[in-house]
Length: 510
Image (cartoon, rainbow, N blue to C red):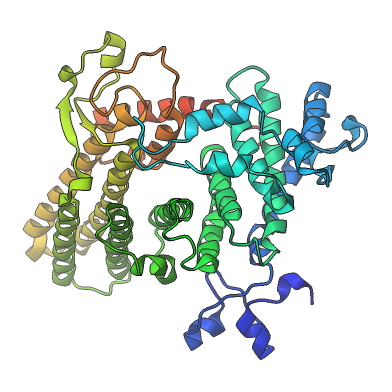
């Protein structure tokens, strides 16, 4: 049996077949034992993704012909020379075994695209963009001496760097370069995960985070994104309590946990019990620990709403019980609102008339604007708002089901509950849209306009923060026409600031 099929440590010890289910095998779940020790867990998760990208690029090269000579020569500057460029695809280049000094040159620590990416996406602590930071440890991890198991992070960063820069000159070549390095990153990550020492290292976890950003912004295939969210979960399980009190480790845990929770909400998945075990031992008095725990709790509330809808669709509840359950959900919703009474959740609301700006900027501002301490806190608020929107959409579906039951004894209550959920969704939509100016760098956290000549620092990462909430609300058919128009405008601005506007449509996975 190949090493890939060995399964978890517990099944190997018992010499039984392991089904390698998502999140753990059935035998371990039945016995209530931790499922760990997959010999090449990462290779199992990621092994098909490199093949998909490679096949796509190979089919693309048959249609469009070989890559331009200039593109090939640039690729060879990043890799070991591998024969005539016109007869090879990027994936036929082998990983170099050169010294760390030459590897730093090949893998682009001095590449201007990389530093332009850092300038647009990395937010350092205690500056005007974020008091806590976002990807703040990525540049240092990228610059550290490169050895074999750290190839993947270099490739992942280069992939996002080229993808986010496709709106300039040589856009088509940059698109090809982006997927070239994306495929190399996946392949190198798979090799890193085969090593028991490095499979849960900071480098590996940061690589998965960066690859997920690439896929969230520049790929359409949901299964690609799913694989890396599951990868984060498995890596966190392997890490255990490692790094909880280390700044770099805590930053990576926070980024990964937040992405996992967002994935559960977006896909309508139940919360994974073991995905939050590392939070249980942390002090809830810490503001940032409190935020992460609230993220888990709002997911649990949303799961109750989804369970209610499943029961209604299965005719498992009568009309009076459904109304009672929905009222209970509204009560839980109000409790979730009360979670934000603590000081670290505070923000200021101003009118757009209070902003002294040009007519062009004024036209982009919503009626009211929220000023948060930083862009990350605006995102934390929007995470909860989007979760509540999704919950109320589930409750509205339950109420629609009640209409079909034609139970006239609950008509008045149904209309009241529907009006409450509808008004809540529209109110939350307004609140999300009111964070757009600060998130996209139109104004500071003090409400002062930012000159258009200023370098667009933070605009790309602010767009990344807004992407998921904006996608959710712009696809709703119960918001007002004005809200829908502003959400669509915001989405176009996000695409522009992140590089999505020059989307990788010709190289995306189908």
